[in-house]
Length: 94
Image (tube, rainbow, N blue to C red; front, side):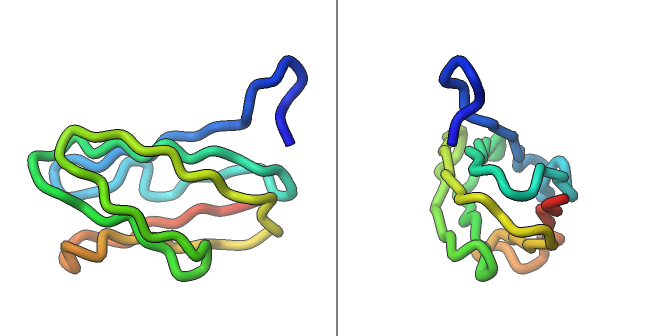
């Protein structure tokens, strides 16, 4: 589902200096969305979330789009599977 005018609801998560920004992303529950993942680092990362059933490799300097269905209210964690020392992030659907 897109907003009036054909625009999708989109949000951005950026990876740099070995952390995700924002670490907690609040999104509207019940709406499909596009998550833009920007890797500003000089190494490959893997954006992964078991709860969202997503796993995407993002090369250095690359940007990807992850389309998500309407999420029920709740918390959905994500992490960089290539770097276990990087703190997990979360998407909170409200």
